[in-house]
Length: 546
Image (cartoon, rainbow, N blue to C red; front, top):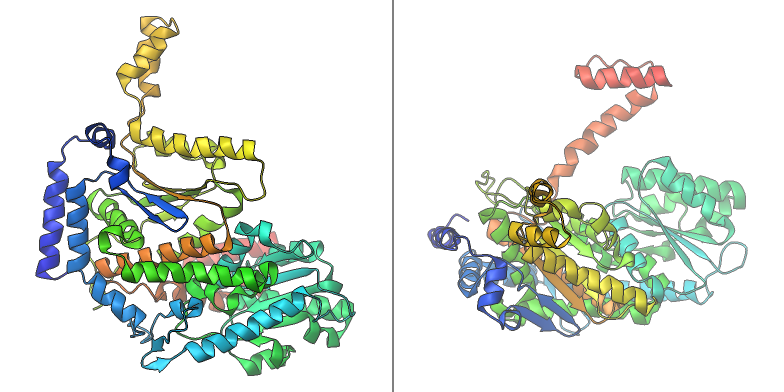
């Protein structure tokens, strides 16, 4: 946000915000009966409604002016051209190539990556189909019934989220599981649920050194070898990685290894061979629909004008609230139980991408970047944290997601679910004044003294912003579209904040310190003198407890 043009755009937005005075979202609707028509975008089977926001046509124009002066269009072109937009690691960020089904070439620093992408995709899909149809069998000669994905971060969040979201499309004779936490309870509980004789393990680690993943993989390997014999390891494990020597040493056959590239960030890797769990679960045809959904949004993001461009609108609304209204959090509430892991998936996508405090030049920024992202499915969230969303002192913009038609669920239940979703966004916007509360209490024949005491507690401030994503029905293609919408939203915000959305150096220090601490925690004879008093004291107490 450093150029003169950008500073002018920021100043114009700041002045505009102050000029809005006490106008509320409800006022905007009263003044403009056609507000919804003006502030929504429909794309295929998704409708993005952003009418319940603190904005006018002027606000939107000024936000898009900021996007242009920040260079969103030029940076978007660089992203799709495969230029090294990840400047600290000198890499492109070309995850869009992984879902490219158009036949067009895509280049990473001048090299067309599509032949190798298509070859790897075909290899992975063929393996997935062979597992599904029983062509590839377990060591006992029977079909696999359970698939366990072992990964962490993007190698877990993507497969775990997508497999749950698309549960109605998963073959009825397959059960999908995911393991991520190095806490032995995660793998231990999974091993109790699965029959090892018919379980396939997918080990997802680009380097095949990720400590959590490899610890879990080694324990799973030990369990398989103990029950089925050492030779069974080759039949019951496959890998998504690039380190063939390490994979071979583990005992995995070379024809069961699927790779991806260093221009694929972990939080974008669901589109790569990391999607193997999903491909096995839903099959090649539906998996290709999932990829198509991502490509749909790539096309929309590149071709749609900024004022009709859903990721750009999402991004600039986020900028508006984060940097001008001081909103430090953003909630994502899918009214879909199977989308329960979607907020967690977005936590990594947004907070790992844009949780940065220095700009592209390494200079500390003087503005706020990524908000805290959180969420749970509706209606569960209504009985947990919605109290704070409605009456708390902090304003939290919200994304609601809801299908018009349920997937494999009772229609009467879905009508109630749908009504709740609309009711929450309406209540957040409208609120309830002290006068309206008093009138309702008088209608209940309460005494004036009782009304005076109770009324302030029942006031809803309202004027709390939300967007709604309404889609026809949750399908593989719709899920692909939703993921890609948020990916490009994050990219646009990174451009406006002038930060690198594609590195994650903030996770390194903790890893380094954990590697140092692990042998000391494991060996009670090791000295803790080099550590601060808190760390040393905790280790000493843990040793005593043990």
